[in-house]
Image 1 (cartoon, helix red, strand yellow):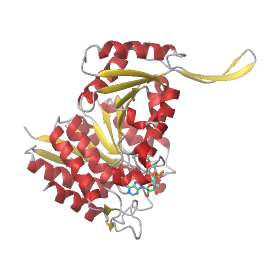
Image 2 (tube, rainbow, N blue to C red):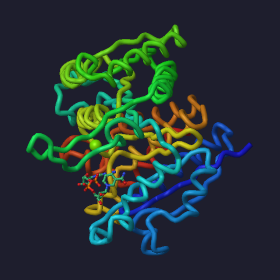
Image 3 (tube, helix red, strand yellow):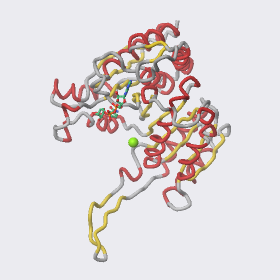
Image 4 (cartoon, rainbow, N blue to C red):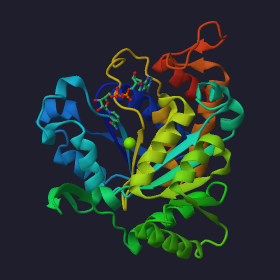
Length: 358
Ligand code: NAI
Ligand code: MG
């Protein structure tokens, strides 16, 4: 009955933050009798140094057979001169492809005590709780393209956007189910006033919504959505959108939170899903023991929610992170002098969260 988690620390602060998240998962596993077991695998620059490839076959195999993958981050200047197929980032693309990760999830939730870090006014951002669901392996990023051709005497290039009904159905179903665990509202974002792919998208999402009578569905054009995220983010619950629109909107939404060290993500696959912070390997602070572990710990909570169906345990982690922040603990990325806050490093922040789990 045990559930196997494959942990891929990667490079830079990846080791520090995945160790922290693993400690939290171990404690939660004991408390809720989840029977989690852990296996560690290499990827990124450190894997290249040890095995001559950024993504060893053994890592792919283990990931495919896992119940969930917890990923740190990859990359670092020392590997920048390698040929493209040896570079650390290849590990991410390779895992995305081998696990068929079709949906990328980014929650944006700003606890009141961190609202001051958002570029938005506290009154606008406080209480916002959004989940962006981005289609990840279709659309214009994977369509046919032409780098250069001459037509009517002028050089041009083109990229083809296409979506099939099964592709849209799959992501729409995921968004509906995710909304069922939240406030029950899905906003589908497209550009149906202009694009044929968007009209198919809208029609398909509308059809899928009929399978979920408890979910409220709204549609929004992407340009309007970009504005609404900045001026009225509290209206959203789940946002579902295409690869291209989701790439842009999820980065816009990520900065609303104001603090990269707090933002988790998930990439959902047909069998195995992968969970990682949205930030990178932070080489500037790697090895110093001061990285903020919260984004990775919150990614571990998403693993419990979306891969293991353990909603209660997931919420316990999220509440423990909130409570540790409420107690005043802050890693240096969020610490302010003379604020009465308590300065934490990776270890003390993790301990404060563990203490809240009890
Ligand atoms: P980054 O996200 O690693 O760092 C940006 C800034 O945020 C740095 O000042 C860093 O110290 C800070 N930061 C990031 N995470 C933090 C945390 N948990 N706690 C405290 N501070 C934190 O982005 P950057 O510097 O552009 O890239 C560094 C390396 O990471 C590059 O090699 C890049 O390719 C790679 N990268 C990898 C990603 C992944 O593995 N999914 C995603 C983004 C970048
Ligand atoms: Mg992006």
